[in-house]
Image 1 (cartoon, rainbow, N blue to C red):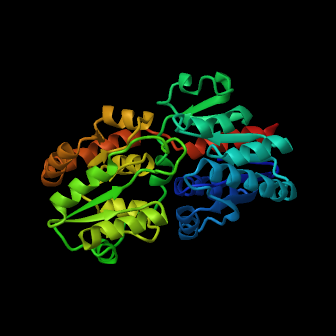
Image 2: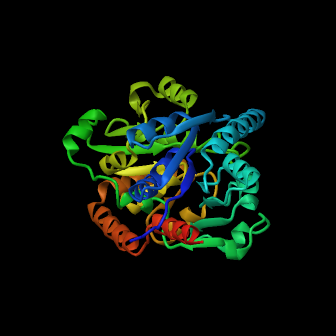
Image 3: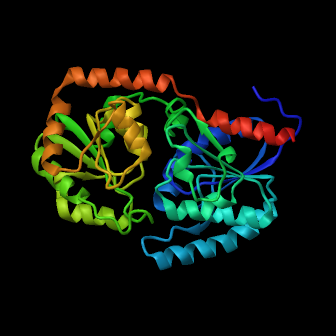
Length: 362
């Protein structure tokens, strides 16, 4: 598809589990074309473990700063210092990130062109530290240009793709081969399965936000633990410990990082406090409920298309869960609706390949 007369050195900064999934296909394509790649990451439990699971080789530089603003500042500053040395030695001709403030600062400081992706204009702190320094911003078409206003980027630097981000891996990931074996691995024995993904509570855009996710989880456990396997996919080690201590054997707290697509495939209903796995579940055609404490453009689109329900009331969520679990016709329609929508979307990796193709041709 892309015929290059020479290869370039490209640096990917990969910071979260989503970014592992999002960039894996692009990295594989670029390696096939003999480009020289360096993928950096940071010490962050889910990201490091998932990168090993997906065979994405990361050079770990620095660590996640946690929930404290002071600790975030210290971790980011230290990481910039260490990345500067690593990247100066690699001498990349292009940087690709998913709104990485450290990558933005290092690339800008060393004069390296920087292409960044983002579907999260609501993460204002991260965007203010990233967007002004990049050459191009790539984002889903549902995010209006006005969402990036006052962030130091012009409209002609924004390239939109007709897809939601999970499309980048949904089409390339291996589908579930042995459901019985997978169910056994997760210890699923009851009539139904509900997967709950808490919000990213230590993210800068959520630190000062009130959340009723814990109240909602309590209602789900109280009403469904006798008839349904309730799997909770925690994000942080302290969060996992708290969930295990509070709920005991009424829920299954997943301590190890798992294959998200496999887990979603096994579930009857997915309840998400964040954005990525909620969108992934919806696009896979699973009955999906968003309990995120903030508004996402992606959530709004999926609600409009009938792929998710946005609920913040614990009593209502119990009623809706009962309906979703018992209504087989709804479940079939949801799968068909998701397929029609995703079939119309493009692969975000294609946009990146075209930009790299253009860059190489200069």
